[in-house]
Length: 319
Ligand code: AMP
Image (cartoon, rainbow, N blue to C red; front, side):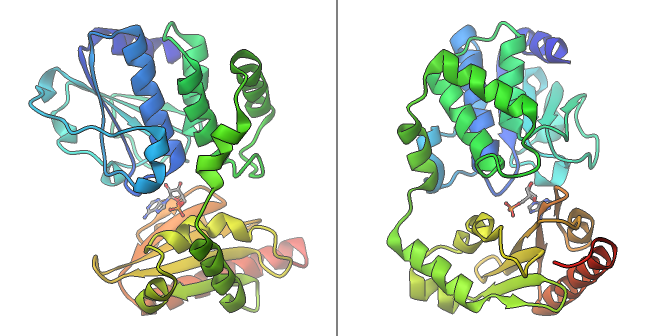
């Protein structure tokens, strides 16, 4: 499949790289790195990385606005996105040809060519493999970005999506490019004191259900008190991985401006993505998200997850 994707890239002069809404380092790094690799190899092509950015990820590079392109002659590559409704791009149906490169469990086919490996650690890992298997050029800056996306999506090699192939690839890249780890890790993990204090607030106020679902409701008032932004709690979700009494945990953030409640969910055992799908969400078996409108729906989601944990405990034993 790598060759087919590469041959398609060769054919088009204009290429747009998109990814899912709610940008994260894996989605954005795969997008920017692939853009840079295509331009390094074919400087005459026009390549755009699109979607709404976040100041948090400016270290990965800049996103583009598309101006005056003929969609009917252009290629769209969608990264890290299993379903059409979550693609952060416009005019998807107008493109001449569409490719999907993704590591999420399959949701729907919406591209002409779909390269999916839901066993892969990250979309960045897929792009690293793609670069090693084709004639696209690599350089240190491109590989550092891909490393950052991979590290972020495996939560520093902790998640089960980390495979032997992940370590092989990372070893190979480190040998070849001699990364400065301080430079690579600092932008990913450095954060202001107010966020650390906010994390303390979450830790103090987590509610844990009978069967091990931990949750915290973050209201506008709390967000304002700690002077963090609405996405801060969701961004911290991976800090609560190893709590003995907790099997599934979630941050519930009220976004009053957009009249939506955003929920990030993680698990260290039971599969949660199917429950998330019932609440306008989805994702991976152990890492999902959902979007609901009311706190009644939140209660129902907590109950559903509690039942999933109950069944899991009956089968597997204690938390
Ligand atoms: P997050 O908690 O936002 O980091 O998301 C964790 C995983 O769930 C990622 O793979 C997301 O792509 C996926 N995800 C988050 N929100 C949604 C949603 N509303 N619908 C489908 N997938 C989602």
